[in-house]
Image 1 (tube, rainbow, N blue to C red):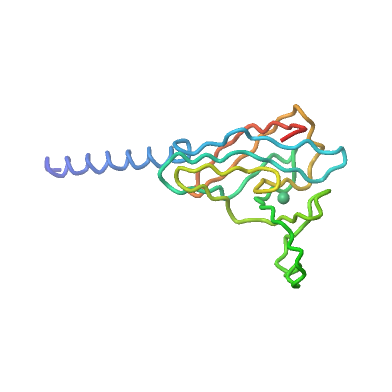
Image 2 (spheres, rainbow, N blue to C red):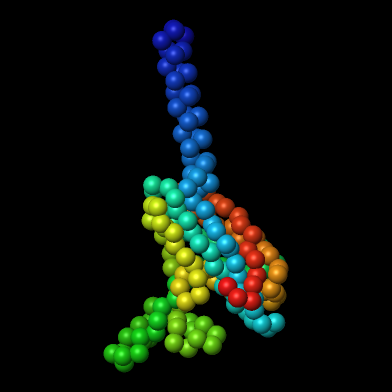
Amino acid sequence: MSPTLLRRAALVTCIALIVTACGSNASAEGLSIEDPRARSTAPTAERGAVYFDLVNSSDEDRSVVSASVGGDVAGVVELHETIAAEGHGDGDMDDGEGGMDSMDGMAAMQMREVAQIDAVAGETVALEPGGLHVMLFELAGPLEAGATFELTLAFDDGSEETVNVEVRDEV
Ligand SMILES: [Cu+2]
């Protein structure tokens, strides 16, 4: 190999290393999950909800595309939004889009699955009661205040982060 080719090969190797390093740190840098928490449930409850702040301090728009928990916590996990049920009687209350459900004790609110939760560059998105949340279905057991469980979030760039969710009576 000529000296020129060697130099070129070395340069290509360096660039590949840099790209790999940046890619693997994409979610750790600039995106964080603050205060992950879940509301405690009744002993016979089959559903639960997880909340947190999704903080994007990077200069790129990012999103959470899915969430998961261990089978010892819940069988199904979905990203949800809560919407106010419209009461003006124009007939679009039941538009057949599916996934609509009323929360226990909150007949005026409905929720549905969303494909992803977006956090625009530099902004914080709050997942909180009455808004966006991570929904747990088929709870393996009640969520008891003081307990914790792991929640893994997958992001748009293919990276993942696992956080410890704390169960509280007041979220
Ligand atoms: Cu929900």
